[in-house]
Amino acid sequence: MPVAAAFDQPRIGVGAVILNERNEVLLVWRNRQPEQYTWSIPGGKVDPYESLETAVIREIKEEVDLDITIDQLLCTAETIRPEREEHWISVLYSARNIRGIARNLEEGGAIGEIGWFPLHDLPSPLACFAVPGLEAAKRLYMD
Image 1 (cartoon, rainbow, N blue to C red):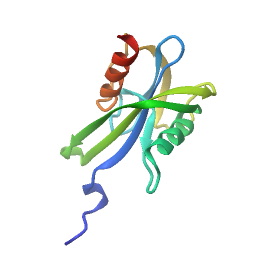
Image 2: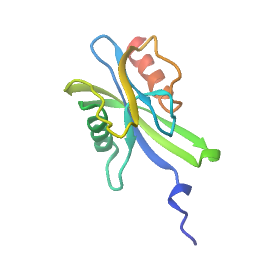
Image 3: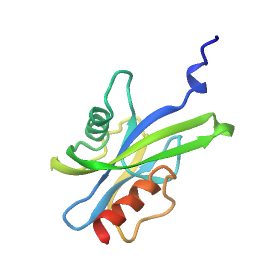
């Protein structure tokens, strides 16, 4: 049985809904695909042999220079776009900042800007994979 090429397999991503004490969520502007030109929760790809929780902690540190602790699993999200050869399964967590001030560390330009936004008044457009996590956070923190 032939083995499929890497781009024929779903990729696994992680992301974190990070809220501050004012119920504002940290969002990043995506300058690259997937989901280019949208606001998203910070996160990224899971590396081979890396646990999901380790991956989200690493990605948040690499992107926005925060040390986080994971509160809980919020949900999963799936993005399937055959026309772009994209299939992502994203595991999304709620998390808290335990050290650091959010700043853009993406020197390659993957992230344009970052900002804190009220959970009840989010910017547009939002990355489709971030929406389920943000909706789950609203249910968790605003109900």
